[in-house]
Image (cartoon, rainbow, N blue to C red; front, top):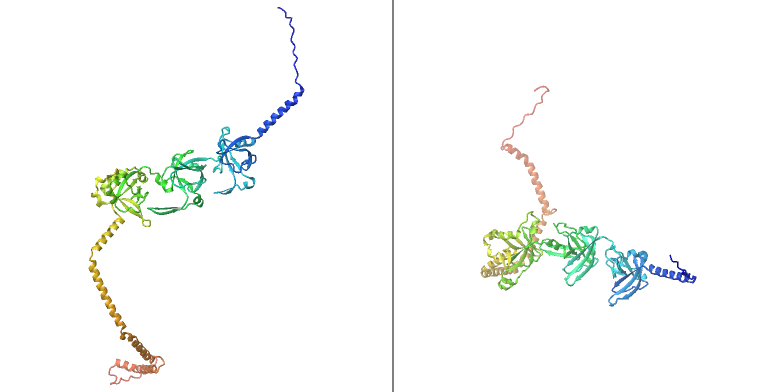
Length: 545
Protein backbone atom coordinates (compact mmCIF):
# COMPACT_ATOMS: atom_id res chain seq x y z
CA UNK A 1 0.00 0.00 0.00
CA UNK A 2 1.42 3.32 -1.07
CA UNK A 3 1.73 5.91 1.61
CA UNK A 4 0.58 9.59 1.21
CA UNK A 5 2.81 12.38 2.29
CA UNK A 6 -0.06 15.02 2.33
CA UNK A 7 -0.66 16.62 5.67
CA UNK A 8 -4.15 17.25 7.23
CA UNK A 9 -5.77 20.68 6.72
CA UNK A 10 -6.75 22.28 9.93
CA UNK A 11 -9.66 24.90 9.89
CA UNK A 12 -10.20 27.16 12.84
CA UNK A 13 -13.88 27.59 13.93
CA UNK A 14 -14.81 31.17 14.73
CA UNK A 15 -16.92 31.67 17.87
CA UNK A 16 -20.01 33.97 17.89
CA UNK A 17 -19.19 37.26 19.33
CA UNK A 18 -20.86 38.15 22.56
CA UNK A 19 -21.93 41.41 21.07
CA UNK A 20 -24.71 39.62 19.06
CA UNK A 21 -26.46 38.28 22.11
CA UNK A 22 -28.22 41.54 22.92
CA UNK A 23 -29.65 42.15 19.38
CA UNK A 24 -30.84 38.56 19.13
CA UNK A 25 -32.59 38.69 22.47
CA UNK A 26 -34.09 42.04 21.53
CA UNK A 27 -35.40 40.66 18.23
CA UNK A 28 -36.93 37.62 19.93
CA UNK A 29 -38.61 39.78 22.54
CA UNK A 30 -39.89 42.14 19.86
CA UNK A 31 -41.31 39.32 17.83
CA UNK A 32 -42.96 37.94 20.94
CA UNK A 33 -44.46 41.32 21.74
CA UNK A 34 -45.78 41.68 18.19
CA UNK A 35 -47.28 38.18 18.32
CA UNK A 36 -48.80 38.80 21.72
CA UNK A 37 -50.24 42.11 20.54
CA UNK A 38 -52.03 40.61 17.57
CA UNK A 39 -52.95 37.47 19.46
CA UNK A 40 -54.60 39.51 22.20
CA UNK A 41 -56.61 41.53 19.70
CA UNK A 42 -58.95 38.59 19.19
CA UNK A 43 -60.71 37.20 16.13
CA UNK A 44 -61.54 39.80 13.46
CA UNK A 45 -64.93 39.94 11.72
CA UNK A 46 -66.74 42.17 9.24
CA UNK A 47 -70.25 43.63 9.36
CA UNK A 48 -72.27 45.13 6.50
CA UNK A 49 -74.86 47.78 7.36
CA UNK A 50 -77.08 50.33 5.64
CA UNK A 51 -75.66 53.16 7.73
CA UNK A 52 -73.31 53.69 10.68
CA UNK A 53 -75.56 55.89 12.81
CA UNK A 54 -74.12 56.03 16.34
CA UNK A 55 -71.24 53.59 15.62
CA UNK A 56 -67.75 54.99 16.35
CA UNK A 57 -64.47 53.16 15.68
CA UNK A 58 -62.59 52.38 18.88
CA UNK A 59 -65.57 53.25 21.11
CA UNK A 60 -68.58 51.17 20.07
CA UNK A 61 -68.41 47.84 21.88
CA UNK A 62 -69.78 44.40 21.04
CA UNK A 63 -71.88 42.88 23.84
CA UNK A 64 -73.47 39.57 24.66
CA UNK A 65 -75.98 39.57 27.52
CA UNK A 66 -74.69 43.04 28.57
CA UNK A 67 -71.06 41.79 28.79
CA UNK A 68 -68.34 43.32 26.56
CA UNK A 69 -67.04 40.67 24.17
CA UNK A 70 -65.44 42.80 21.44
CA UNK A 71 -64.99 46.26 19.93
CA UNK A 72 -65.35 48.07 16.61
CA UNK A 73 -61.98 48.95 15.05
CA UNK A 74 -62.90 50.57 11.74
CA UNK A 75 -65.93 52.08 10.01
CA UNK A 76 -65.68 52.74 6.26
CA UNK A 77 -67.75 52.74 3.09
CA UNK A 78 -67.76 49.85 0.67
CA UNK A 79 -66.02 50.10 -2.68
CA UNK A 80 -69.30 50.87 -4.44
CA UNK A 81 -70.32 53.38 -1.72
CA UNK A 82 -73.69 51.64 -1.28
CA UNK A 83 -73.22 50.27 2.24
CA UNK A 84 -71.11 50.61 5.36
CA UNK A 85 -68.31 48.18 6.18
CA UNK A 86 -67.67 47.78 9.91
CA UNK A 87 -64.61 45.86 11.03
CA UNK A 88 -64.31 44.63 14.59
CA UNK A 89 -62.83 41.89 16.68
CA UNK A 90 -63.95 39.49 19.36
CA UNK A 91 -61.78 39.08 22.44
CA UNK A 92 -59.82 35.83 22.63
CA UNK A 93 -61.70 34.42 25.59
CA UNK A 94 -64.99 35.12 23.76
CA UNK A 95 -64.06 33.48 20.45
CA UNK A 96 -66.55 30.58 20.87
CA UNK A 97 -69.39 33.11 20.45
CA UNK A 98 -68.34 33.87 16.89
CA UNK A 99 -69.89 31.30 14.54
CA UNK A 100 -70.94 31.28 10.93
CA UNK A 101 -74.61 31.83 11.82
CA UNK A 102 -74.11 34.37 14.61
CA UNK A 103 -76.47 37.37 14.59
CA UNK A 104 -75.56 41.04 15.11
CA UNK A 105 -77.89 44.00 15.59
CA UNK A 106 -77.66 47.59 16.81
CA UNK A 107 -79.13 48.40 20.22
CA UNK A 108 -80.49 51.95 20.54
CA UNK A 109 -83.49 53.67 22.15
CA UNK A 110 -86.65 52.49 20.45
CA UNK A 111 -90.39 52.42 21.08
CA UNK A 112 -91.93 49.19 19.83
CA UNK A 113 -94.80 46.75 20.39
CA UNK A 114 -93.12 45.50 23.58
CA UNK A 115 -92.59 48.99 25.03
CA UNK A 116 -89.51 51.20 25.25
CA UNK A 117 -86.16 49.41 24.82
CA UNK A 118 -82.51 50.50 24.81
CA UNK A 119 -82.88 53.30 27.36
CA UNK A 120 -79.41 52.52 28.73
CA UNK A 121 -77.81 53.64 25.48
CA UNK A 122 -78.92 57.25 26.04
CA UNK A 123 -75.87 57.81 28.27
CA UNK A 124 -73.48 55.09 27.10
CA UNK A 125 -74.19 55.32 23.38
CA UNK A 126 -75.31 52.63 21.00
CA UNK A 127 -73.68 49.22 21.00
CA UNK A 128 -73.81 46.05 18.92
CA UNK A 129 -75.42 42.96 20.41
CA UNK A 130 -74.11 39.53 19.44
CA UNK A 131 -76.04 36.27 19.68
CA UNK A 132 -74.10 33.10 18.99
CA UNK A 133 -75.40 30.59 16.47
CA UNK A 134 -75.63 26.81 16.29
CA UNK A 135 -73.23 26.18 13.40
CA UNK A 136 -70.51 23.64 14.28
CA UNK A 137 -68.20 24.26 11.31
CA UNK A 138 -65.02 26.29 11.62
CA UNK A 139 -65.39 30.06 11.34
CA UNK A 140 -65.01 31.23 7.73
CA UNK A 141 -64.87 34.97 8.42
CA UNK A 142 -67.64 35.75 5.94
CA UNK A 143 -69.28 39.19 6.33
CA UNK A 144 -72.32 39.37 8.64
CA UNK A 145 -75.38 41.55 8.09
CA UNK A 146 -75.90 44.11 10.85
CA UNK A 147 -79.63 44.33 11.56
CA UNK A 148 -81.53 47.32 12.93
CA UNK A 149 -83.76 45.15 15.12
CA UNK A 150 -83.16 42.13 17.34
CA UNK A 151 -84.17 38.66 16.15
CA UNK A 152 -87.60 37.52 17.25
CA UNK A 153 -86.29 34.13 18.28
CA UNK A 154 -82.99 33.21 19.81
CA UNK A 155 -81.00 30.92 17.46
CA UNK A 156 -80.33 28.65 20.42
CA UNK A 157 -84.06 28.02 20.87
CA UNK A 158 -85.28 24.91 19.10
CA UNK A 159 -88.31 24.95 16.86
CA UNK A 160 -89.49 24.87 13.27
CA UNK A 161 -89.45 27.58 10.61
CA UNK A 162 -92.21 27.61 8.01
CA UNK A 163 -92.98 29.73 4.95
CA UNK A 164 -96.46 31.12 4.28
CA UNK A 165 -97.81 32.56 1.02
CA UNK A 166 -100.81 34.86 0.82
CA UNK A 167 -102.51 36.36 -2.23
CA UNK A 168 -105.01 38.28 -0.10
CA UNK A 169 -104.88 41.96 0.78
CA UNK A 170 -103.56 43.07 4.13
CA UNK A 171 -100.18 42.57 5.78
CA UNK A 172 -99.29 40.74 8.97
CA UNK A 173 -96.37 42.72 10.45
CA UNK A 174 -93.05 41.32 11.55
CA UNK A 175 -93.19 40.26 15.18
CA UNK A 176 -96.90 39.38 15.13
CA UNK A 177 -97.96 36.39 17.19
CA UNK A 178 -98.52 32.90 15.83
CA UNK A 179 -101.26 31.19 17.82
CA UNK A 180 -102.83 27.78 18.20
CA UNK A 181 -106.39 28.01 19.57
CA UNK A 182 -105.54 31.35 21.13
CA UNK A 183 -102.27 30.22 22.73
CA UNK A 184 -99.05 31.99 21.74
CA UNK A 185 -96.66 29.44 20.19
CA UNK A 186 -94.44 31.50 17.88
CA UNK A 187 -93.85 34.70 15.93
CA UNK A 188 -93.67 36.09 12.42
CA UNK A 189 -89.98 36.58 11.64
CA UNK A 190 -90.13 38.15 8.19
CA UNK A 191 -92.86 39.81 6.15
CA UNK A 192 -92.19 40.91 2.59
CA UNK A 193 -93.96 41.28 -0.75
CA UNK A 194 -92.78 39.20 -3.71
CA UNK A 195 -93.19 41.46 -6.74
CA UNK A 196 -92.76 38.70 -9.32
CA UNK A 197 -95.22 36.31 -7.68
CA UNK A 198 -97.46 39.19 -6.51
CA UNK A 199 -97.85 37.55 -3.14
CA UNK A 200 -97.03 38.29 0.45
CA UNK A 201 -94.44 35.89 1.82
CA UNK A 202 -93.93 35.27 5.52
CA UNK A 203 -91.47 33.25 7.56
CA UNK A 204 -92.72 32.14 10.94
CA UNK A 205 -90.99 30.36 13.80
CA UNK A 206 -92.81 27.98 16.15
CA UNK A 207 -90.91 26.98 19.26
CA UNK A 208 -90.52 23.51 20.70
CA UNK A 209 -92.62 21.66 21.89
CA UNK A 210 -95.39 23.41 19.96
CA UNK A 211 -93.77 22.54 16.64
CA UNK A 212 -95.28 19.07 17.05
CA UNK A 213 -98.70 20.67 16.49
CA UNK A 214 -97.82 21.47 12.88
CA UNK A 215 -98.65 18.67 10.45
CA UNK A 216 -99.19 18.52 6.72
CA UNK A 217 -102.97 19.01 7.04
CA UNK A 218 -103.04 22.10 9.26
CA UNK A 219 -104.27 25.39 7.83
CA UNK A 220 -103.05 28.91 8.63
CA UNK A 221 -105.26 32.01 8.59
CA UNK A 222 -105.02 35.69 9.48
CA UNK A 223 -106.15 37.08 12.80
CA UNK A 224 -106.73 40.71 13.64
CA UNK A 225 -109.42 43.31 13.39
CA UNK A 226 -113.11 42.97 14.17
CA UNK A 227 -114.57 40.45 11.77
CA UNK A 228 -118.27 40.99 11.02
CA UNK A 229 -119.66 38.26 8.79
CA UNK A 230 -123.10 38.46 7.20
CA UNK A 231 -123.95 35.12 5.69
CA UNK A 232 -126.95 33.00 4.91
CA UNK A 233 -126.78 31.72 8.47
CA UNK A 234 -126.99 35.21 9.94
CA UNK A 235 -124.51 37.66 11.37
CA UNK A 236 -121.45 36.73 13.43
CA UNK A 237 -119.03 39.06 15.20
CA UNK A 238 -115.51 37.89 16.01
CA UNK A 239 -113.44 40.14 18.29
CA UNK A 240 -109.85 38.97 19.01
CA UNK A 241 -107.70 39.90 22.00
CA UNK A 242 -106.50 43.50 22.31
CA UNK A 243 -102.88 42.89 21.27
CA UNK A 244 -103.96 40.87 18.22
CA UNK A 245 -106.55 43.54 17.42
CA UNK A 246 -103.84 46.20 17.42
CA UNK A 247 -101.09 44.39 15.50
CA UNK A 248 -102.66 41.33 13.88
CA UNK A 249 -101.50 37.73 14.03
CA UNK A 250 -101.66 34.27 12.49
CA UNK A 251 -103.51 31.22 13.80
CA UNK A 252 -103.41 27.60 12.70
CA UNK A 253 -105.44 24.49 13.37
CA UNK A 254 -106.85 21.41 11.68
CA UNK A 255 -110.09 21.85 9.72
CA UNK A 256 -113.07 20.07 11.23
CA UNK A 257 -112.92 16.36 10.43
CA UNK A 258 -109.40 16.48 8.97
CA UNK A 259 -106.73 13.95 9.95
CA UNK A 260 -103.37 14.93 11.43
CA UNK A 261 -101.14 13.68 8.63
CA UNK A 262 -97.35 13.65 8.68
CA UNK A 263 -95.33 16.12 10.80
CA UNK A 264 -94.16 19.26 9.03
CA UNK A 265 -90.54 19.77 8.01
CA UNK A 266 -88.29 22.80 8.18
CA UNK A 267 -89.26 25.51 5.67
CA UNK A 268 -92.36 23.72 4.40
CA UNK A 269 -94.65 26.07 2.48
CA UNK A 270 -98.31 26.62 3.46
CA UNK A 271 -101.04 28.88 2.12
CA UNK A 272 -102.21 31.68 4.40
CA UNK A 273 -106.02 32.00 4.28
CA UNK A 274 -108.02 35.13 4.92
CA UNK A 275 -110.08 33.82 7.85
CA UNK A 276 -111.05 30.66 9.70
CA UNK A 277 -114.13 30.09 7.56
CA UNK A 278 -111.92 29.83 4.47
CA UNK A 279 -109.95 26.91 5.89
CA UNK A 280 -113.13 24.88 6.33
CA UNK A 281 -114.00 25.26 2.66
CA UNK A 282 -110.42 24.58 1.55
CA UNK A 283 -110.58 20.89 2.46
CA UNK A 284 -113.25 20.17 -0.17
CA UNK A 285 -111.03 19.94 -3.22
CA UNK A 286 -113.24 17.59 -5.27
CA UNK A 287 -116.40 19.03 -6.78
CA UNK A 288 -118.75 18.84 -9.73
CA UNK A 289 -120.09 22.02 -11.28
CA UNK A 290 -123.74 22.58 -12.21
CA UNK A 291 -125.43 25.44 -14.00
CA UNK A 292 -128.70 26.89 -12.70
CA UNK A 293 -130.89 29.18 -14.79
CA UNK A 294 -132.76 31.31 -12.25
CA UNK A 295 -135.89 33.27 -13.18
CA UNK A 296 -136.31 34.85 -9.73
CA UNK A 297 -134.38 37.80 -8.33
CA UNK A 298 -130.92 36.83 -7.05
CA UNK A 299 -130.62 39.83 -4.74
CA UNK A 300 -129.23 38.40 -1.50
CA UNK A 301 -127.45 35.45 -3.12
CA UNK A 302 -123.66 35.73 -2.80
CA UNK A 303 -120.67 33.62 -3.72
CA UNK A 304 -119.99 31.13 -0.95
CA UNK A 305 -123.66 30.66 -0.08
CA UNK A 306 -124.54 27.03 0.73
CA UNK A 307 -126.30 24.51 -1.47
CA UNK A 308 -128.48 22.33 0.76
CA UNK A 309 -130.86 19.42 0.69
CA UNK A 310 -133.21 19.34 3.70
CA UNK A 311 -130.66 21.28 5.75
CA UNK A 312 -127.70 19.08 4.72
CA UNK A 313 -125.02 21.07 2.93
CA UNK A 314 -123.97 19.51 -0.36
CA UNK A 315 -122.04 22.31 -2.02
CA UNK A 316 -121.33 25.99 -2.50
CA UNK A 317 -122.41 28.77 -4.81
CA UNK A 318 -119.37 29.40 -6.99
CA UNK A 319 -120.25 32.35 -9.24
CA UNK A 320 -123.12 34.88 -9.10
CA UNK A 321 -124.00 35.64 -11.86
CA UNK A 322 -122.12 33.40 -14.26
CA UNK A 323 -122.02 34.62 -17.85
CA UNK A 324 -119.97 33.00 -20.60
CA UNK A 325 -119.19 34.48 -24.00
CA UNK A 326 -121.75 32.17 -25.56
CA UNK A 327 -124.41 33.37 -23.14
CA UNK A 328 -123.71 37.02 -23.83
CA UNK A 329 -123.98 36.42 -27.55
CA UNK A 330 -127.44 34.97 -26.98
CA UNK A 331 -129.02 38.26 -25.93
CA UNK A 332 -132.41 36.76 -25.22
CA UNK A 333 -131.05 35.08 -22.12
CA UNK A 334 -130.36 38.46 -20.53
CA UNK A 335 -134.08 39.23 -20.38
CA UNK A 336 -135.24 35.85 -19.14
CA UNK A 337 -132.90 33.99 -16.80
CA UNK A 338 -129.85 34.60 -14.62
CA UNK A 339 -127.18 31.86 -14.78
CA UNK A 340 -125.69 30.70 -11.49
CA UNK A 341 -122.73 28.32 -11.16
CA UNK A 342 -122.65 26.00 -8.14
CA UNK A 343 -120.27 23.30 -6.93
CA UNK A 344 -121.49 20.00 -5.51
CA UNK A 345 -118.78 18.72 -3.13
CA UNK A 346 -119.00 14.95 -2.52
CA UNK A 347 -116.68 15.08 0.50
CA UNK A 348 -119.35 16.95 2.45
CA UNK A 349 -121.67 13.97 2.13
CA UNK A 350 -118.82 11.54 2.79
CA UNK A 351 -118.63 12.90 6.34
CA UNK A 352 -122.16 11.60 6.96
CA UNK A 353 -122.09 8.21 5.22
CA UNK A 354 -119.43 5.54 5.08
CA UNK A 355 -119.83 4.56 1.43
CA UNK A 356 -118.74 7.03 -1.21
CA UNK A 357 -121.67 8.23 -3.32
CA UNK A 358 -121.47 9.72 -6.79
CA UNK A 359 -123.61 12.65 -5.78
CA UNK A 360 -123.16 14.40 -9.14
CA UNK A 361 -124.71 11.64 -11.21
CA UNK A 362 -127.32 11.06 -8.53
CA UNK A 363 -128.53 14.65 -8.89
CA UNK A 364 -128.66 14.33 -12.68
CA UNK A 365 -130.77 11.16 -12.52
CA UNK A 366 -133.11 12.30 -9.74
CA UNK A 367 -134.33 15.27 -11.77
CA UNK A 368 -136.59 12.80 -13.55
CA UNK A 369 -138.26 12.19 -10.19
CA UNK A 370 -138.92 15.88 -9.54
CA UNK A 371 -135.63 17.10 -8.04
CA UNK A 372 -135.38 20.86 -8.53
CA UNK A 373 -133.27 23.76 -7.31
CA UNK A 374 -134.78 26.93 -5.90
CA UNK A 375 -133.85 30.08 -4.02
CA UNK A 376 -134.79 30.24 -0.37
CA UNK A 377 -134.28 32.80 2.36
CA UNK A 378 -132.08 31.66 5.22
CA UNK A 379 -132.13 34.87 7.24
CA UNK A 380 -135.01 37.34 7.31
CA UNK A 381 -132.85 40.02 8.93
CA UNK A 382 -130.09 40.11 6.29
CA UNK A 383 -132.17 38.90 3.35
CA UNK A 384 -129.51 36.30 2.53
CA UNK A 385 -130.45 33.52 0.11
CA UNK A 386 -129.19 30.00 -0.49
CA UNK A 387 -129.80 27.24 -3.03
CA UNK A 388 -132.21 24.55 -1.89
CA UNK A 389 -132.54 21.15 -3.56
CA UNK A 390 -135.81 19.32 -3.01
CA UNK A 391 -138.33 17.04 -4.69
CA UNK A 392 -141.52 18.45 -6.24
CA UNK A 393 -143.77 15.54 -7.30
CA UNK A 394 -145.98 17.83 -9.41
CA UNK A 395 -142.94 18.60 -11.61
CA UNK A 396 -142.01 14.97 -12.15
CA UNK A 397 -143.59 14.80 -15.60
CA UNK A 398 -142.25 18.20 -16.68
CA UNK A 399 -138.59 17.21 -16.89
CA UNK A 400 -137.02 18.17 -20.21
CA UNK A 401 -134.00 16.01 -21.02
CA UNK A 402 -132.94 18.53 -23.67
CA UNK A 403 -132.07 20.96 -20.89
CA UNK A 404 -129.86 18.47 -19.03
CA UNK A 405 -126.75 20.11 -20.47
CA UNK A 406 -126.48 23.77 -21.47
CA UNK A 407 -123.50 25.88 -22.49
CA UNK A 408 -121.16 22.98 -21.71
CA UNK A 409 -122.37 22.47 -18.12
CA UNK A 410 -124.66 19.92 -16.51
CA UNK A 411 -127.84 21.71 -15.53
CA UNK A 412 -130.23 21.42 -12.61
CA UNK A 413 -133.72 22.63 -13.45
CA UNK A 414 -135.12 25.30 -11.16
CA UNK A 415 -138.50 26.29 -9.77
CA UNK A 416 -139.87 29.32 -7.97
CA UNK A 417 -140.63 28.98 -4.27
CA UNK A 418 -140.71 31.06 -1.16
CA UNK A 419 -140.92 34.80 -1.73
CA UNK A 420 -141.15 34.36 -5.47
CA UNK A 421 -144.43 32.48 -5.05
CA UNK A 422 -145.67 35.01 -2.51
CA UNK A 423 -144.81 37.80 -4.91
CA UNK A 424 -146.67 36.02 -7.70
CA UNK A 425 -149.74 35.60 -5.47
CA UNK A 426 -149.63 39.26 -4.50
CA UNK A 427 -149.47 40.25 -8.16
CA UNK A 428 -152.39 37.95 -8.90
CA UNK A 429 -154.33 39.48 -6.03
CA UNK A 430 -153.63 42.96 -7.38
CA UNK A 431 -154.80 41.88 -10.82
CA UNK A 432 -158.04 40.54 -9.33
CA UNK A 433 -158.47 43.75 -7.43
CA UNK A 434 -158.02 45.76 -10.60
CA UNK A 435 -160.70 43.65 -12.33
CA UNK A 436 -163.31 44.53 -9.69
CA UNK A 437 -166.02 47.20 -10.54
CA UNK A 438 -164.24 49.76 -8.47
CA UNK A 439 -165.89 52.75 -10.20
CA UNK A 440 -169.46 51.69 -9.30
CA UNK A 441 -168.39 50.86 -5.79
CA UNK A 442 -166.74 54.24 -5.40
CA UNK A 443 -169.91 56.01 -6.68
CA UNK A 444 -172.06 54.18 -4.14
CA UNK A 445 -169.53 54.94 -1.48
CA UNK A 446 -169.61 58.64 -2.40
CA UNK A 447 -173.42 58.64 -2.22
CA UNK A 448 -173.27 57.04 1.21
CA UNK A 449 -170.86 59.73 2.30
CA UNK A 450 -173.22 62.44 1.01
CA UNK A 451 -176.17 60.89 2.90
CA UNK A 452 -174.09 60.69 6.04
CA UNK A 453 -173.13 64.32 5.59
CA UNK A 454 -176.77 65.38 5.29
CA UNK A 455 -177.67 63.40 8.41
CA UNK A 456 -174.87 65.06 10.34
CA UNK A 457 -176.05 68.49 9.19
CA UNK A 458 -179.60 67.74 10.39
CA UNK A 459 -178.31 66.61 13.78
CA UNK A 460 -176.23 69.76 14.04
CA UNK A 461 -179.32 71.89 13.29
CA UNK A 462 -181.36 70.12 15.97
CA UNK A 463 -178.61 70.54 18.50
CA UNK A 464 -178.36 74.24 17.62
CA UNK A 465 -182.15 74.90 18.06
CA UNK A 466 -183.53 77.00 20.97
CA UNK A 467 -185.46 74.05 22.39
CA UNK A 468 -182.25 72.01 22.73
CA UNK A 469 -180.45 75.02 24.17
CA UNK A 470 -183.25 75.55 26.81
CA UNK A 471 -183.47 71.85 27.73
CA UNK A 472 -180.54 71.96 30.18
CA UNK A 473 -182.16 74.91 31.99
CA UNK A 474 -185.49 73.05 32.39
CA UNK A 475 -183.68 69.99 33.68
CA UNK A 476 -181.82 72.15 36.17
CA UNK A 477 -185.08 73.65 37.51
CA UNK A 478 -186.64 70.18 37.86
CA UNK A 479 -183.63 68.98 39.83
CA UNK A 480 -183.90 71.95 42.20
CA UNK A 481 -187.61 71.23 42.82
CA UNK A 482 -186.87 67.59 43.52
CA UNK A 483 -184.14 68.61 45.93
CA UNK A 484 -186.53 70.89 47.83
CA UNK A 485 -189.08 68.07 48.06
CA UNK A 486 -186.49 65.70 49.45
CA UNK A 487 -185.55 68.19 52.15
CA UNK A 488 -189.12 67.86 53.59
CA UNK A 489 -188.68 64.21 54.47
CA UNK A 490 -185.18 64.42 55.83
CA UNK A 491 -184.60 63.22 59.48
CA UNK A 492 -185.57 65.97 61.98
CA UNK A 493 -188.18 67.57 59.75
CA UNK A 494 -191.81 67.91 60.90
CA UNK A 495 -193.08 65.62 58.17
CA UNK A 496 -190.52 62.98 59.09
CA UNK A 497 -191.54 63.18 62.80
CA UNK A 498 -195.24 62.84 62.01
CA UNK A 499 -194.57 59.88 59.78
CA UNK A 500 -192.58 58.15 62.55
CA UNK A 501 -195.43 58.75 65.11
CA UNK A 502 -198.02 57.37 62.71
CA UNK A 503 -195.90 54.29 62.11
CA UNK A 504 -195.56 53.74 65.88
CA UNK A 505 -199.35 53.97 66.36
CA UNK A 506 -199.91 51.53 63.55
CA UNK A 507 -197.39 49.16 65.17
CA UNK A 508 -199.20 49.43 68.54
CA UNK A 509 -202.52 48.76 66.90
CA UNK A 510 -201.13 45.69 65.19
CA UNK A 511 -199.79 44.40 68.50
CA UNK A 512 -203.27 44.73 70.06
CA UNK A 513 -204.99 43.03 67.13
CA UNK A 514 -202.61 40.10 67.10
CA UNK A 515 -204.44 38.03 69.89
CA UNK A 516 -207.81 38.69 68.25
CA UNK A 517 -206.56 37.59 64.91
CA UNK A 518 -205.08 34.50 66.49
CA UNK A 519 -208.46 33.66 68.13
CA UNK A 520 -210.36 34.18 64.88
CA UNK A 521 -207.90 32.01 63.13
CA UNK A 522 -208.63 29.16 65.58
CA UNK A 523 -212.42 29.80 65.81
CA UNK A 524 -214.04 31.97 63.21
CA UNK A 525 -217.33 32.48 65.25
CA UNK A 526 -215.57 33.55 68.40
CA UNK A 527 -217.09 37.04 68.06
CA UNK A 528 -220.68 35.55 68.19
CA UNK A 529 -220.32 32.63 70.59
CA UNK A 530 -218.37 32.98 73.73
CA UNK A 531 -215.88 30.26 74.50
CA UNK A 532 -216.84 27.65 77.24
CA UNK A 533 -215.55 28.24 80.71
CA UNK A 534 -212.85 25.95 81.78
CA UNK A 535 -213.27 24.00 85.02
CA UNK A 536 -211.06 24.87 87.83
CA UNK A 537 -208.65 22.12 88.52
CA UNK A 538 -209.09 20.37 91.85
CA UNK A 539 -206.09 19.74 93.93
CA UNK A 540 -205.33 16.11 94.48
CA UNK A 541 -203.78 14.41 97.48
CA UNK A 542 -200.53 12.65 97.15
CA UNK A 543 -200.95 9.10 96.26
CA UNK A 544 -204.39 9.63 94.71
CA UNK A 545 -204.69 9.32 91.11
